[in-house]
Length: 499
Image (cartoon, rainbow, N blue to C red):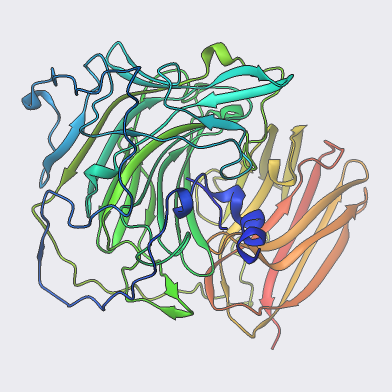
């Protein structure tokens, strides 16, 4: 859940930290062991116990404070939902009076440990406790040396690592600027493929407290860092802080599927990792034992810091249950899927519906999509052959109000031309770019600021693709945080090859 890396490592960290909450460096790392290529096999029987020894000893419980003996599990396993093809590997319903130390370790970390977060993770029973059948990770605001000081909780199930399976977690998040709850997974042996992101990371759920109606699911991997992210937006006026929701992952040798309340929100089947520039055999790095962890961060590069609106009396991340299932066997003879690249239309345009002839759904993932983040409020509609964007709140970042078209074929060495017509109801600014959502959001065409007038103008830009081939390039029009909420009109959008 954490987007970071560790001076070359520090510089990279500053660039990447916003994308992930805690990487491979949270414990001492073993020397990199050169992995052997996997041997193809029809089926692999998966043992229900981890086959790898943790690279560090689990954090012991304190001598005082919470009891160290695990509570009796008061749940009849026959009452726990079963899934076809899976058996229950382990679970915790949190029905005891204290944390089950046969499963969980409480982590301690100083403030600023990662992502410029503010909290100290402690072993205090005020930050980590079981109440009314739920695990509670609580963020607390105090004063230290005359300044605001924050503590919070983080737990991991490193001693219950597993290879492939289904993870199901019911949780309710806190709401408030600067609060950052997460359910995520890291490898049991974090040094096998090397430091983050080479070792891989699986984020089952992350929510930013100031936009608690959006839940993110992300996979991090590679050298250089790459990621793939999906999200679920609640559109009925509720948030993930209003009630418990179920977040789940189905992890198989060649695919990961993420769900919110049973709805598939993200699927990933194309990843990689490298050691010294040499790419390791697929499905590395996600062919090793991983473990589940959960935490409530305060502040950091992605959510920003708390402010006067953050109510710490309600800063509790509640987990009702964690259940891990596994199939008796998995087919590990998998191959990396071939990339499929979008073909241009007959007129050479790589943008579909660039003339806005079709009044399409702007909420789905087909062609155009309108997005709002970080306080952005607005609407978009296709009418009379143009896209009309009306902004009520410009938000806090340039992508707070955003129009995009994804799946653009980006070929290394190819030259491209972007062109479109645009105007505004009042003079105002907008940013256009071509981004790489799966390659740590680098820019194939840099963020380019343009000033719109009240008259139609044609804008044309050319660029050369210098990175490796990517079938998921994305054209972006970013209209947030530009000191204006004036309406914007766009028409005749084209991206084409320059032959």
